[in-house]
View 1 (cartoon, rainbow, N blue to C red):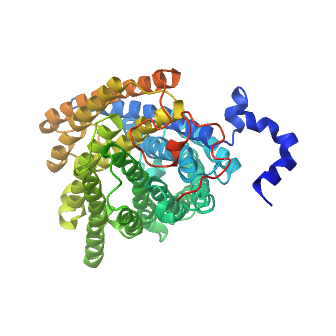
View 2 (view 1 turned 60 degrees about the vertical axis):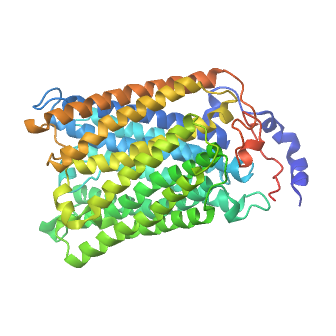
View 3 (view 1 turned 180 degrees about the vertical axis):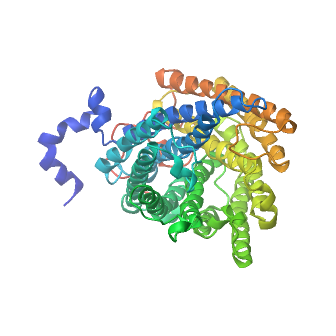
Length: 531
C-alpha cells in the first residue's frame, strides 16, 4: 500500500497534525515531534550545565585559598559528587541526545524518529529524575558525598538520600536506553532510499555506535546500584567483606559501565566535529571509511580497558599489563581520527567562523587530554597519579574542551538552521576566546598540582599548592561567567536577527541543508533520493 493511500484513509481525523504544532503548554508536554523533543533536551541540558557549573563554582571558591574557608567539608563532598553526576548524566548526555533528536531524522531524510511516543517519554523522565537527585541536598544527612563513582562502603554512609540517588540513576538509565533504542531503529529502518550505511553522515554513524554502547552498559550500572541498595536495606553482602562479598567487585561493575560511558559522551562529539571541519575547509572529509572503522574500534576497545581505573587495588601483574596495553591501543584509532581531521583541513579553503574555532580548539585540546590519558595508562606511573588532581586535569580536558566544546560547536553550526536566524558572529567569537583561554587557565595548572601530589575531592590542601589553586579558581570563575554570554547569544538568535539562508554556510554537505531555515515542522514527508 503506498504512502499516499494510507494517508487518504486517515485524512479526516489526522488533518490537524499537518498544520504544525499544538498551542501552548500541551505542545511541549505531549509532543512527538523530533524537533520539539530535541529542543527540550537541549534546553534541559543547558539548565543542568548551569546547575552543575554553579556547584563547580562552590568547589573552586573553597579551593581558592588553603584552609577550610566557605563550606563544610561534608557539603564540599556533596558538591563534588553532585557536580559530576549532573554534568555527566544531566548536561553532556542530554545535549548530545538533543542534537541526535534534532539532526538524525533530517540527516537521513526521515520524517521523524521511529518511535515518537517513546521519544517523548524518554525526555520527560529526565526532569523528574534530576529533581529527585537535587532534592537529596535538602534531606537529613544531605546529598550523596561519596563521589559519582559511588564506591562502597563510603557511599553506604549516605543516609536517607541513598535510595533517592539510586532511583534517580535508574530513571536516567531508562531514559538513556529508550533514547538509544529509538536512535538505532530510526537509523536502521528510516534512511532515505539510496542512503547506504557508508553514505550516512559521520554524526549519524557515531550516534549509531554510541547507541549500541548505551544499550550494552546502562543495565550493568543498574545492576551495580541495585546491589548497593540491597546491601544497605535488605541484608545482602555483595560488597561487604564481612559477609563474604568484595568491595572491589563493585569497582569492576561500575567501571565496566563507566569506561564505555566516557566514550558515550565523546563519540557524538567526534561526529559533530567530523561534520563541521569539512564544511569550513570546503573539502569532503578525508578518510571517511577509516573514520567509521576507527569509531567502531574505539567502541569495541572501550569494553576491555575498564580496570585501568583500578590499578591501585592490587590486581595481578598480568591484569595490570593487559589493561595497560589495551588502554594504549585506544590511542591508535583516536590518532587516526585526529590525523583525518587535520588532513581534511590540509590545503582547504578554510574560514574561521565560531563553529570552526570551537572545532579547532577541540582537536588541539582534546589531544592534550588524550596524551595525559596515555600517561595515566602506564600502570607503574599511575600509582603516583592515581587520585590526584592529575586525573581531574586529564578527564576535564577530554570532557570540557572535548565534549562540551564539540556540543557548543554543534549548537553554533546548526542554530541558524533551527531558528532561521543567524547568531551574532562577533559575540560568538568573544564567547569562544573567553572559553578557550579560561578553560586552560582552569585545568592546565591542575596537571602540576597532581604531579606534585595534591589529592582530589579534598576541601583543604597544603600551602605549597596555594598558588596554582588560586590560578585554577580564577580560570574557573572566568569560564563560568563566559557561559552566560553563550546563553545570551542563543536567546538573542532565537528571538530574531539576520535571516539565515537555507544553506546557511558556503557549501555544506548533507540533507539537512536542503530544507528551509527553520525546517518545516514535518520534514521529508516524501523521502529524498540519494544518488
